[in-house]
Image (tube, rainbow over all chains, first blue to last red):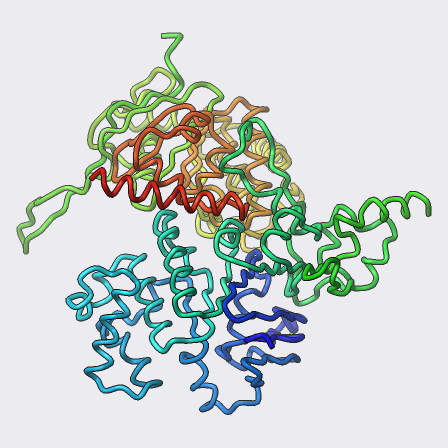
Length: 338
Length: 287
């Protein structure tokens, strides 16, 4: 049994224009000891998925339309707020994108670090403080003992994110959700944070979900990858499968649109842009959501009429498209013949 | 004189005073945002200026356009020394050098229509009749792939990518020779980013533009630039042809910067992680 199992999750937001289908039928699981990367562009629903798991969305405007979220066999939506609080922070912890605003500027780092432990663990204040120093050392903050009494403004962006990680780890969670943990940071600082997350995931034997828009970050950090588009997972596979044998036209296009750091002759060439932009999630396309931008859709195709199911093309490789790469010649022949 | 490059920056400095004291303020120190930066950009060429936040790369761009007054150094553009021009002379020169900003959400006036935003530089410089200008605005919008029938709409009706096209059309209005692109795609998603980068490449080819391309994303800069200048803490760390700097960086800072970039290739990424750690140890021991 997987540590986290999300099945058919639908989270909508009520607006005056109608419901925004932010997350619309998302299913995935995370195994113990593995890292799942959830990747997609802004508005694809990746963060709302994470916040739904954590039960951190304000309702209304948010609304859980369907779906189950099972953590370690327990259905989270059936828990009372009190029971949920015991899971949240202790069993599942989360770090956010912006380390500049996620710490309280009026409390010392030490206070903020011990707060979670005092809530969840049976520790005295002194013991919590000793543990806090250990945690700061664990996330490689020099002079941990002295720095414990500093306020957040004395810490740089990268160090604040390290503190956030320390807080997240303080109760030894079994699952860490990192939502764009390095997006606000410079690239050299990002490298340090990603190294740290990997190191800690191993040491603490946690599972991890990394949510990001950056294909490079998932290539570096994730074992398995789910690509999201317009509120749905369109492709899911192991990192190697996804990067070396992408199937979904969107994944394929996204990889083609990335500027290459290490390739020759990129100055002369053009990037493969994806025409158009993602659909309005108040009124998403009825069938395949990528169809309006898909070079293979159209031609009186059924994928513009009937939504394609997420299907397992190869063991562990799931695709939601009528035109995956490996079936494409065949599809073209059919169109040509018909 | 014929050999002089389009833009020649020599020993550019921008120091911001740090002032202290009550009632009587004294300058106690300087923040050396840009400190001795020199480079050139040739006709139709692109210089990529890279660095991390706070390295002074955007300030350098502003100083070249004289949007910020440099503390010292020389900026020669089309054979003229920009730092010595009078206001009216500078205004004339501004036709030839324009800027595209990072954030298409805050850089367009929300109360102006798309047509007025793009046509404003023509009005300011008194170019053409009203009818000429309307035609020119339509042309410009078409050039950047923006539907010219939307000239009466407002910026908030458009997505980030579309807004950036509006910003580019405005920058092109006066037929400039040089455009400073200050992080032009960093607010955009990958699929939209590729559209805008391709557009900038096409415009350069068709119009013979020169770019100073300021960005923090090293992969983006590589795909846009002939030459690279790496900045750190106000100073130029390394310059050279892009292909060379990326393949064989000489300075430790450049090496560390390049090694830190995640690439969308898991196997290569594992190698790069090892290289990064090795480099980290080597640099740590070197200091």
